[in-house]
Image (cartoon, rainbow, N blue to C red; front, side, top):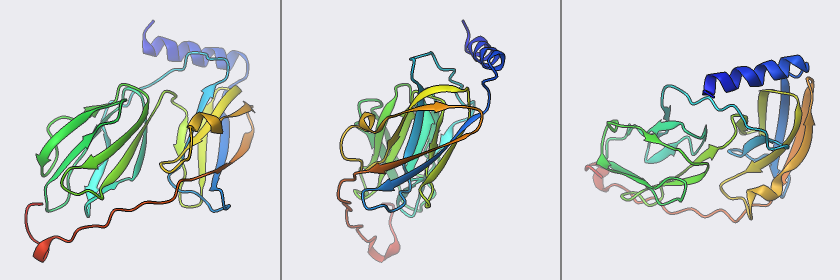
Length: 218
């Protein structure tokens, strides 16, 4: 069965049960009750039903600005591709040793010729061999239903077929397995609220090294 056919069948089943349009409003805070930015909230059908996954036709973007990955956390659906443009005046070398996706983009400026395809779900940690403090994260979701929290710690998942879901939250500094955060929620046509308190690891930052005289390729 093709992806398009699967999506149509999923949608028709949802319409037949009046099950379209469930939304989830998520609030994620840390252990001290502070709003948590850059948390990813993911909803997966509790019955293990196969999910329609639509891969974007155009690559997503993780930029490099002021020697930082922007955004710091990028959630995507499995099968998506990302291009890593370099808008700095210095060269970068992007790599990852993470199991879901191991890759390396040799030292470059501008935009790499080919995007990187992320074909396995999981967390991919990004680094730059030239600038040790440059750390970024790609969260590759097995589900098409996910969202990332803003500075206020809120995220909105929209358009889920009504039903029961296991909804979990993840953050780069999360202590323990993200699966332990899962909540079993019944989502109906009305807006459903859910909240998380995540225990975080202490924040670790690598001191940025100055570029001598503000010049140079690196």
